[in-house]
Length: 280
Ligand code: PXL
Image 1 (cartoon, rainbow, N blue to C red):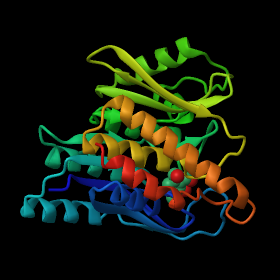
Image 2: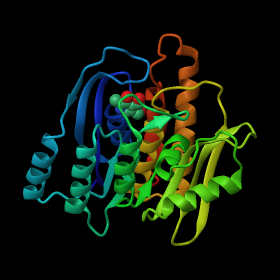
Image 3: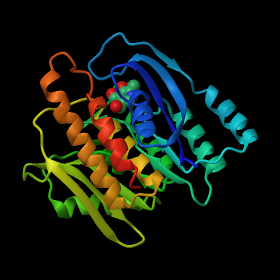
């Protein structure tokens, strides 16, 4: 039987992020993938103007109770972009309803990048997101999100000692493991570092940095990482698979950046990911 994951985030109809990234990636990895769309936007909010935004918050409790009546079990629950504080609370209730002893809950506290919050987010929202992180098994913030969650200044100048300190602080929220994405130590490499509280151990994976910033890379990383863990990969395997796929997808995008400025061309890399995922 296939492992089953549910991913809870918005649909940006055009622009390649959130559900339009997570669904193809998780399916390619061989997971049965259910979705709860939190909002429908005509595009994502990074670089487009005039986008529409339909809030689906009120649908979440109804979907939750219908699924409860069906007695559905999830091996993985992976959340991304959530559009309001009310929605965050409903997702916390969803965790309470569907968490079983073998369910892995992964929260990507999507709020911002490069030191800034995305359009529509406030520092108060970070407090709500912090509460949701405390209910997760694993959280996957980038450096911007970590700085808002911990209320520490955002910096791009740091070393391994600082990253390990931040990871330990994040794990104090109550999650079993914390992963920082987009880590760069000034050595030309770019990757992710994880801390697992129970064993007090760190894991990391890096690839050469590519000098282009692209929208949606965090969603690509978190989708692969969540898929791998839900399939039973180890923390190190999940990190390596997610970092390698994100790097492949960025390399794939570079030649088309002028016309495809809005997202990552991950699609040509899905075949390789499907093959690798058969090992988990
Ligand atoms: O990639 C994160 C993300 C998800 N969903 C929406 C966004 C963003 C980032 O800007 O705007 C709607």
